[in-house]
Length: 423
Image 1 (cartoon, rainbow, N blue to C red):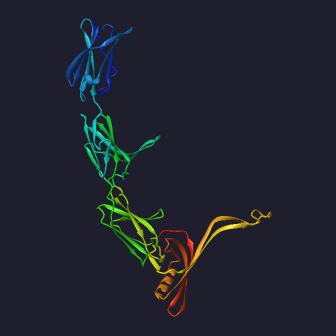
Image 2 (image 1 turned 120 degrees about the horizontal axis):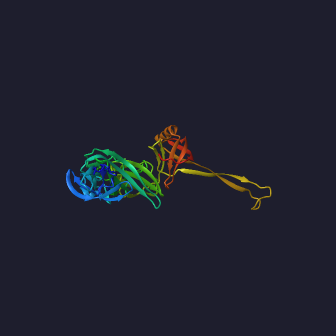
Image 3 (image 1 turned 60 degrees about the vertical axis):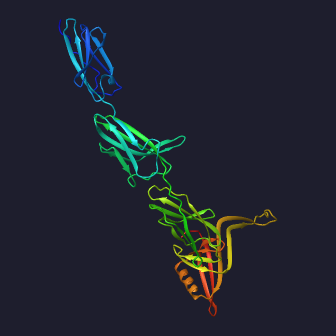
Protein backbone atom coordinates (compact mmCIF):
# COMPACT_ATOMS: atom_id res chain seq x y z
CA UNK A 1 0.00 0.00 0.00
CA UNK A 2 1.31 3.43 -0.87
CA UNK A 3 2.23 5.82 1.92
CA UNK A 4 -0.48 8.37 2.75
CA UNK A 5 -0.26 11.89 1.40
CA UNK A 6 1.53 14.43 3.58
CA UNK A 7 -1.12 16.19 5.69
CA UNK A 8 -1.61 19.92 5.20
CA UNK A 9 -2.29 21.59 8.55
CA UNK A 10 -4.73 24.49 8.54
CA UNK A 11 -5.75 27.00 11.21
CA UNK A 12 -2.41 27.56 12.94
CA UNK A 13 -1.53 31.12 14.03
CA UNK A 14 1.92 32.36 14.83
CA UNK A 15 1.01 33.18 18.44
CA UNK A 16 -1.75 32.41 20.89
CA UNK A 17 -2.92 34.03 24.10
CA UNK A 18 -3.17 31.61 27.07
CA UNK A 19 -6.96 31.69 27.04
CA UNK A 20 -7.28 31.12 23.30
CA UNK A 21 -8.31 27.83 21.73
CA UNK A 22 -5.79 26.21 19.40
CA UNK A 23 -7.73 24.44 16.65
CA UNK A 24 -5.81 22.61 13.90
CA UNK A 25 -7.38 20.74 10.99
CA UNK A 26 -5.93 18.60 8.23
CA UNK A 27 -7.12 16.05 5.65
CA UNK A 28 -5.90 12.59 4.74
CA UNK A 29 -6.63 9.77 2.37
CA UNK A 30 -9.59 7.59 3.29
CA UNK A 31 -7.20 4.73 3.83
CA UNK A 32 -5.65 6.41 6.89
CA UNK A 33 -6.73 4.74 10.10
CA UNK A 34 -5.24 7.14 12.68
CA UNK A 35 -3.74 10.57 13.19
CA UNK A 36 -1.41 11.10 16.09
CA UNK A 37 -0.65 14.51 17.59
CA UNK A 38 2.62 15.03 19.48
CA UNK A 39 3.11 18.30 21.35
CA UNK A 40 6.67 19.56 21.77
CA UNK A 41 7.38 22.45 24.14
CA UNK A 42 10.63 24.27 23.45
CA UNK A 43 11.85 21.18 21.61
CA UNK A 44 10.92 18.65 24.29
CA UNK A 45 8.08 16.15 23.84
CA UNK A 46 5.31 17.14 26.21
CA UNK A 47 2.37 14.93 25.29
CA UNK A 48 0.91 12.57 22.69
CA UNK A 49 -2.74 12.89 21.80
CA UNK A 50 -5.21 11.56 19.25
CA UNK A 51 -7.24 13.56 16.76
CA UNK A 52 -10.83 13.01 15.79
CA UNK A 53 -11.98 12.57 12.21
CA UNK A 54 -15.03 12.90 10.04
CA UNK A 55 -15.42 11.28 6.62
CA UNK A 56 -16.34 12.84 3.32
CA UNK A 57 -16.77 11.04 0.02
CA UNK A 58 -13.14 11.68 -0.99
CA UNK A 59 -11.03 12.15 2.19
CA UNK A 60 -10.96 12.20 5.96
CA UNK A 61 -10.98 15.51 7.86
CA UNK A 62 -9.14 15.54 11.19
CA UNK A 63 -9.53 18.04 14.03
CA UNK A 64 -7.49 18.65 17.16
CA UNK A 65 -8.24 21.37 19.74
CA UNK A 66 -6.68 22.49 23.02
CA UNK A 67 -6.57 25.57 25.21
CA UNK A 68 -3.21 27.25 24.80
CA UNK A 69 -2.56 27.51 28.54
CA UNK A 70 -2.87 23.69 28.88
CA UNK A 71 -0.12 23.12 26.34
CA UNK A 72 2.71 25.22 27.75
CA UNK A 73 3.47 28.24 29.95
CA UNK A 74 3.54 31.79 28.59
CA UNK A 75 6.68 32.45 26.60
CA UNK A 76 7.03 28.93 25.26
CA UNK A 77 7.39 27.80 21.67
CA UNK A 78 5.07 24.91 20.84
CA UNK A 79 5.43 22.51 17.90
CA UNK A 80 2.53 20.22 17.06
CA UNK A 81 3.63 17.17 15.00
CA UNK A 82 0.81 15.43 13.14
CA UNK A 83 1.42 11.85 11.86
CA UNK A 84 -1.15 9.98 9.70
CA UNK A 85 -0.81 6.19 9.47
CA UNK A 86 -2.16 3.55 7.08
CA UNK A 87 -3.16 0.04 8.23
CA UNK A 88 0.14 -1.35 6.94
CA UNK A 89 2.08 1.07 9.12
CA UNK A 90 3.15 3.49 6.44
CA UNK A 91 2.83 7.10 7.57
CA UNK A 92 3.28 10.75 6.68
CA UNK A 93 3.90 13.73 8.98
CA UNK A 94 3.67 17.54 9.11
CA UNK A 95 4.03 20.11 11.89
CA UNK A 96 2.88 23.55 12.96
CA UNK A 97 4.86 25.79 15.29
CA UNK A 98 3.53 28.71 17.32
CA UNK A 99 4.27 30.70 20.46
CA UNK A 100 2.17 31.30 23.56
CA UNK A 101 2.34 34.87 24.70
CA UNK A 102 0.17 37.10 26.87
CA UNK A 103 -0.27 40.80 27.45
CA UNK A 104 2.36 42.28 29.74
CA UNK A 105 1.58 42.04 33.45
CA UNK A 106 1.45 45.69 34.58
CA UNK A 107 0.79 46.98 38.10
CA UNK A 108 0.28 50.69 38.75
CA UNK A 109 1.71 51.17 42.23
CA UNK A 110 1.29 54.92 42.59
CA UNK A 111 -1.00 56.74 42.65
CA UNK A 112 -3.22 54.14 44.26
CA UNK A 113 -6.77 54.02 42.98
CA UNK A 114 -8.95 56.20 45.19
CA UNK A 115 -6.00 57.97 46.81
CA UNK A 116 -5.69 61.69 47.54
CA UNK A 117 -2.99 64.01 46.22
CA UNK A 118 -2.28 66.81 48.68
CA UNK A 119 0.78 68.40 47.07
CA UNK A 120 3.20 68.30 44.14
CA UNK A 121 4.92 66.40 42.62
CA UNK A 122 2.62 63.73 41.18
CA UNK A 123 4.51 60.47 41.65
CA UNK A 124 3.76 57.67 39.15
CA UNK A 125 5.31 54.25 39.89
CA UNK A 126 4.60 50.96 38.14
CA UNK A 127 6.00 47.48 37.55
CA UNK A 128 6.03 45.33 34.39
CA UNK A 129 6.55 41.59 33.99
CA UNK A 130 6.81 40.04 30.53
CA UNK A 131 9.13 37.41 29.05
CA UNK A 132 9.31 39.25 25.73
CA UNK A 133 10.32 42.57 27.25
CA UNK A 134 8.79 46.02 26.76
CA UNK A 135 8.69 47.62 23.32
CA UNK A 136 6.73 50.82 24.11
CA UNK A 137 5.24 52.75 27.04
CA UNK A 138 2.95 55.76 27.22
CA UNK A 139 1.46 57.60 30.20
CA UNK A 140 -1.38 60.12 30.32
CA UNK A 141 -2.94 62.31 33.01
CA UNK A 142 -6.58 63.10 32.38
CA UNK A 143 -9.10 65.29 34.17
CA UNK A 144 -12.37 63.57 34.91
CA UNK A 145 -15.65 65.47 34.84
CA UNK A 146 -19.07 64.01 35.33
CA UNK A 147 -22.70 64.98 35.67
CA UNK A 148 -25.99 63.15 35.56
CA UNK A 149 -25.90 62.92 31.78
CA UNK A 150 -22.30 63.53 30.76
CA UNK A 151 -19.06 61.68 31.43
CA UNK A 152 -15.94 63.05 29.85
CA UNK A 153 -12.21 62.65 30.20
CA UNK A 154 -9.73 65.21 28.99
CA UNK A 155 -6.00 64.59 28.62
CA UNK A 156 -4.01 67.39 30.22
CA UNK A 157 -0.57 65.77 29.94
CA UNK A 158 0.92 62.79 28.14
CA UNK A 159 4.26 61.45 26.97
CA UNK A 160 5.97 58.42 25.42
CA UNK A 161 8.46 56.93 27.88
CA UNK A 162 11.66 54.96 27.62
CA UNK A 163 11.06 51.21 27.64
CA UNK A 164 13.00 50.76 30.88
CA UNK A 165 11.20 53.57 32.77
CA UNK A 166 9.29 52.43 35.86
CA UNK A 167 8.69 55.70 37.69
CA UNK A 168 7.90 59.32 36.91
CA UNK A 169 7.74 62.49 38.99
CA UNK A 170 5.66 65.32 37.53
CA UNK A 171 5.86 68.86 38.85
CA UNK A 172 4.90 72.34 37.73
CA UNK A 173 5.23 73.68 35.09
CA UNK A 174 5.69 70.39 33.20
CA UNK A 175 2.40 69.13 34.57
CA UNK A 176 -0.41 71.68 34.22
CA UNK A 177 -2.04 73.00 37.37
CA UNK A 178 -4.38 70.45 38.95
CA UNK A 179 -7.63 71.97 40.18
CA UNK A 180 -8.40 71.51 43.86
CA UNK A 181 -11.23 69.12 44.79
CA UNK A 182 -11.18 67.59 41.29
CA UNK A 183 -10.76 63.99 40.14
CA UNK A 184 -7.93 62.94 37.82
CA UNK A 185 -6.74 59.65 36.37
CA UNK A 186 -3.35 58.27 35.39
CA UNK A 187 -3.49 55.97 32.34
CA UNK A 188 -0.50 53.74 31.51
CA UNK A 189 -0.19 51.80 28.22
CA UNK A 190 2.56 49.15 28.01
CA UNK A 191 3.32 47.11 24.85
CA UNK A 192 5.45 43.97 25.02
CA UNK A 193 7.86 42.48 22.51
CA UNK A 194 5.06 40.63 20.74
CA UNK A 195 3.01 43.79 20.21
CA UNK A 196 0.45 42.95 22.89
CA UNK A 197 -0.68 45.89 25.02
CA UNK A 198 -1.95 46.30 28.57
CA UNK A 199 -3.64 49.47 29.80
CA UNK A 200 -4.06 50.20 33.50
CA UNK A 201 -5.35 53.29 35.26
CA UNK A 202 -5.91 54.75 38.71
CA UNK A 203 -8.16 57.61 39.75
CA UNK A 204 -7.14 60.05 42.46
CA UNK A 205 -8.62 63.16 44.06
CA UNK A 206 -6.75 66.44 44.33
CA UNK A 207 -7.17 67.93 47.79
CA UNK A 208 -4.50 70.52 48.39
CA UNK A 209 -3.49 71.30 51.95
CA UNK A 210 -4.71 74.81 52.73
CA UNK A 211 -2.24 77.33 54.15
CA UNK A 212 -2.97 78.57 57.63
CA UNK A 213 -5.21 81.62 57.95
CA UNK A 214 -3.04 84.76 58.18
CA UNK A 215 -2.98 86.86 61.33
CA UNK A 216 -3.20 90.63 61.63
CA UNK A 217 -0.20 92.58 62.88
CA UNK A 218 -1.62 96.09 62.65
CA UNK A 219 -4.33 98.24 61.09
CA UNK A 220 -3.06 101.82 60.84
CA UNK A 221 -5.21 104.79 59.68
CA UNK A 222 -3.62 107.95 58.31
CA UNK A 223 -6.18 110.70 58.90
CA UNK A 224 -4.17 113.33 57.03
CA UNK A 225 -4.00 111.30 53.82
CA UNK A 226 -7.27 109.43 54.52
CA UNK A 227 -5.60 106.07 53.93
CA UNK A 228 -5.50 102.77 55.82
CA UNK A 229 -2.46 100.49 56.06
CA UNK A 230 -3.04 96.76 56.59
CA UNK A 231 -0.10 94.75 57.88
CA UNK A 232 -0.17 91.01 58.52
CA UNK A 233 2.35 88.84 60.30
CA UNK A 234 4.92 86.90 58.29
CA UNK A 235 3.48 84.44 55.79
CA UNK A 236 4.64 80.84 55.35
CA UNK A 237 7.39 80.32 52.80
CA UNK A 238 6.13 79.69 49.27
CA UNK A 239 2.87 81.59 49.68
CA UNK A 240 1.42 84.91 48.61
CA UNK A 241 -1.43 87.01 49.95
CA UNK A 242 -4.39 88.82 48.44
CA UNK A 243 -6.05 91.83 50.07
CA UNK A 244 -9.70 92.65 49.32
CA UNK A 245 -11.81 95.55 50.56
CA UNK A 246 -15.50 94.77 51.15
CA UNK A 247 -17.99 97.65 51.37
CA UNK A 248 -21.73 96.87 51.39
CA UNK A 249 -21.07 93.55 49.67
CA UNK A 250 -18.92 95.09 46.93
CA UNK A 251 -15.50 93.43 46.74
CA UNK A 252 -12.46 95.28 45.40
CA UNK A 253 -9.08 93.53 45.12
CA UNK A 254 -6.43 95.94 46.39
CA UNK A 255 -3.30 93.82 46.15
CA UNK A 256 -2.22 90.33 45.13
CA UNK A 257 0.98 88.37 44.72
CA UNK A 258 2.14 89.84 48.00
CA UNK A 259 4.83 88.35 50.15
CA UNK A 260 3.86 89.76 53.52
CA UNK A 261 0.79 91.95 53.48
CA UNK A 262 1.81 95.53 54.22
CA UNK A 263 -0.49 97.39 51.88
CA UNK A 264 -1.83 100.92 51.86
CA UNK A 265 -5.49 101.30 50.89
CA UNK A 266 -5.48 104.69 49.18
CA UNK A 267 -9.24 105.16 49.05
CA UNK A 268 -11.09 103.54 51.95
CA UNK A 269 -14.58 104.85 52.68
CA UNK A 270 -14.62 107.57 55.34
CA UNK A 271 -16.73 107.66 58.49
CA UNK A 272 -18.32 104.19 58.14
CA UNK A 273 -17.44 100.61 59.02
CA UNK A 274 -16.29 98.13 56.39
CA UNK A 275 -14.06 95.04 56.20
CA UNK A 276 -10.85 93.74 54.66
CA UNK A 277 -10.23 90.12 53.73
CA UNK A 278 -6.72 88.68 53.53
CA UNK A 279 -6.30 85.26 51.89
CA UNK A 280 -3.04 83.31 51.65
CA UNK A 281 -2.45 81.15 48.55
CA UNK A 282 0.15 78.43 48.04
CA UNK A 283 2.39 79.37 45.11
CA UNK A 284 2.59 75.79 43.85
CA UNK A 285 -0.81 74.22 44.45
CA UNK A 286 -2.95 77.34 44.37
CA UNK A 287 -4.74 76.20 47.54
CA UNK A 288 -6.18 79.17 49.43
CA UNK A 289 -6.50 79.66 53.17
CA UNK A 290 -9.65 80.64 54.96
CA UNK A 291 -9.84 84.44 54.77
CA UNK A 292 -8.80 86.67 57.63
CA UNK A 293 -11.68 89.15 58.08
CA UNK A 294 -10.65 92.53 59.48
CA UNK A 295 -13.21 95.07 60.65
CA UNK A 296 -12.09 98.60 59.79
CA UNK A 297 -13.38 102.12 60.39
CA UNK A 298 -11.87 105.42 59.29
CA UNK A 299 -13.16 107.53 62.19
CA UNK A 300 -12.92 110.93 60.57
CA UNK A 301 -15.20 113.79 59.59
CA UNK A 302 -12.85 114.79 56.78
CA UNK A 303 -13.58 115.14 53.10
CA UNK A 304 -11.03 113.87 50.59
CA UNK A 305 -10.36 114.45 46.89
CA UNK A 306 -7.98 112.05 45.11
CA UNK A 307 -6.26 112.76 41.80
CA UNK A 308 -4.03 110.76 39.46
CA UNK A 309 -4.34 107.44 37.63
CA UNK A 310 -3.65 105.58 40.89
CA UNK A 311 -5.42 108.15 43.08
CA UNK A 312 -2.04 108.72 44.71
CA UNK A 313 -2.54 112.49 45.15
CA UNK A 314 -4.98 113.50 47.90
CA UNK A 315 -6.29 116.82 49.24
CA UNK A 316 -8.01 116.50 52.62
CA UNK A 317 -10.50 118.94 54.16
CA UNK A 318 -10.81 118.48 57.92
CA UNK A 319 -13.96 120.62 58.18
CA UNK A 320 -17.36 120.64 56.61
CA UNK A 321 -17.57 122.71 53.43
CA UNK A 322 -20.66 124.44 52.14
CA UNK A 323 -22.27 121.96 49.80
CA UNK A 324 -24.85 122.13 47.02
CA UNK A 325 -25.81 118.90 45.26
CA UNK A 326 -28.20 118.41 42.36
CA UNK A 327 -29.57 115.19 40.86
CA UNK A 328 -31.61 115.30 37.65
CA UNK A 329 -33.17 112.35 35.85
CA UNK A 330 -33.79 112.55 32.15
CA UNK A 331 -37.36 112.41 30.90
CA UNK A 332 -40.10 114.09 28.90
CA UNK A 333 -43.38 115.77 29.92
CA UNK A 334 -46.36 115.25 27.61
CA UNK A 335 -49.67 117.13 27.59
CA UNK A 336 -52.56 115.30 25.97
CA UNK A 337 -55.25 117.03 23.94
CA UNK A 338 -58.08 115.61 26.07
CA UNK A 339 -56.42 116.77 29.25
CA UNK A 340 -55.27 113.30 30.20
CA UNK A 341 -55.88 112.10 33.72
CA UNK A 342 -55.28 113.74 37.06
CA UNK A 343 -57.05 116.98 36.35
CA UNK A 344 -55.23 117.77 33.11
CA UNK A 345 -51.70 117.44 34.50
CA UNK A 346 -48.96 116.31 32.10
CA UNK A 347 -47.57 112.77 32.03
CA UNK A 348 -43.86 112.28 32.70
CA UNK A 349 -41.88 109.54 30.91
CA UNK A 350 -38.42 108.99 32.35
CA UNK A 351 -35.32 107.88 30.47
CA UNK A 352 -32.16 106.19 31.72
CA UNK A 353 -30.26 109.49 31.62
CA UNK A 354 -29.16 110.90 34.95
CA UNK A 355 -27.04 113.90 35.85
CA UNK A 356 -25.50 114.44 39.27
CA UNK A 357 -23.43 117.50 40.08
CA UNK A 358 -22.69 119.87 42.86
CA UNK A 359 -20.39 122.47 44.43
CA UNK A 360 -18.19 122.50 47.51
CA UNK A 361 -17.05 125.82 48.98
CA UNK A 362 -14.77 126.49 51.89
CA UNK A 363 -12.33 129.08 53.20
CA UNK A 364 -8.68 128.42 53.94
CA UNK A 365 -5.68 130.44 54.99
CA UNK A 366 -3.30 127.79 53.58
CA UNK A 367 -1.96 129.09 50.30
CA UNK A 368 -0.20 125.77 49.76
CA UNK A 369 -3.58 124.01 49.63
CA UNK A 370 -4.84 126.49 47.03
CA UNK A 371 -1.73 126.09 44.89
CA UNK A 372 -1.84 122.28 45.14
CA UNK A 373 -5.53 122.12 44.21
CA UNK A 374 -4.95 124.34 41.16
CA UNK A 375 -1.90 122.33 40.12
CA UNK A 376 -3.67 118.97 40.44
CA UNK A 377 -6.80 120.21 38.68
CA UNK A 378 -4.74 121.42 35.74
CA UNK A 379 -2.97 118.05 35.53
CA UNK A 380 -5.95 115.80 36.24
CA UNK A 381 -9.45 116.89 35.17
CA UNK A 382 -10.94 113.77 36.80
CA UNK A 383 -10.82 112.74 40.45
CA UNK A 384 -12.48 110.78 43.23
CA UNK A 385 -14.46 112.47 46.01
CA UNK A 386 -15.10 110.92 49.43
CA UNK A 387 -17.38 112.44 52.03
CA UNK A 388 -17.41 111.54 55.76
CA UNK A 389 -20.65 109.55 55.37
CA UNK A 390 -19.13 106.66 53.41
CA UNK A 391 -20.04 107.96 49.95
CA UNK A 392 -17.49 107.83 47.15
CA UNK A 393 -17.86 108.99 43.58
CA UNK A 394 -15.77 109.85 40.55
CA UNK A 395 -16.20 113.28 39.02
CA UNK A 396 -15.06 115.84 36.52
CA UNK A 397 -13.67 118.54 38.84
CA UNK A 398 -13.64 122.28 38.09
CA UNK A 399 -12.16 124.40 40.90
CA UNK A 400 -12.39 128.15 41.31
CA UNK A 401 -10.35 130.10 43.86
CA UNK A 402 -10.68 133.68 45.03
CA UNK A 403 -8.89 135.92 47.52
CA UNK A 404 -11.56 137.64 49.64
CA UNK A 405 -9.50 139.29 52.33
CA UNK A 406 -6.02 139.24 53.77
CA UNK A 407 -4.68 135.68 54.15
CA UNK A 408 -8.09 134.06 53.46
CA UNK A 409 -8.88 132.21 50.24
CA UNK A 410 -12.29 131.10 49.06
CA UNK A 411 -12.30 127.79 47.18
CA UNK A 412 -15.31 126.71 45.12
CA UNK A 413 -15.17 123.30 43.52
CA UNK A 414 -17.78 122.39 40.90
CA UNK A 415 -18.09 118.71 40.03
CA UNK A 416 -20.04 116.52 37.61
CA UNK A 417 -20.34 112.83 38.53
CA UNK A 418 -19.12 110.31 35.94
CA UNK A 419 -19.09 106.54 35.78
CA UNK A 420 -17.18 104.96 38.65
CA UNK A 421 -13.76 103.48 37.98
CA UNK A 422 -11.41 101.98 40.51
CA UNK A 423 -7.97 103.60 40.52
